Length: 114
Image 1 (spheres, rainbow, N blue to C red):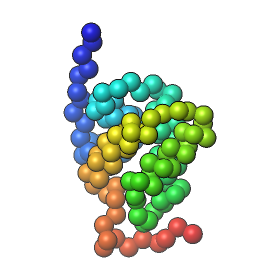
Image 2: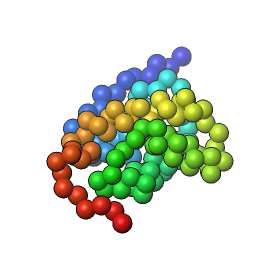
Image 3: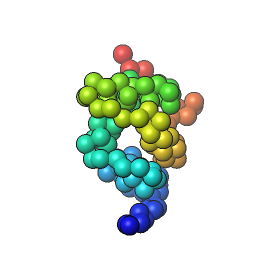
Image 4: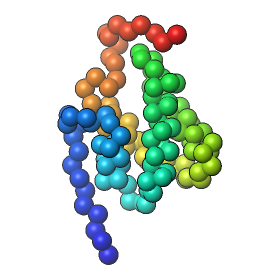
């Protein structure tokens, strides 16, 4: 039986908010199989949520992100347990919250997306 090694990934490392780092992070923290094809769709759904639904300066909500990514998986014809998706999203949110500048604080001036 192969033992999975836990990898230390820092939110302060260069490129922390990038697909390869987030993928490695998720794989190091879950205890279930996540095929690359499913990860690719989860990542695509999350990127759409982050870039298009949230945009710059808008609030990010965990529940909305989960629903958005699940909708993306459904549209791609992928059946994936919602509880496992929630676990993946928690890992992503917990990590992204620690990346300097990933979330804007209330004092940051932004021009809303139109």
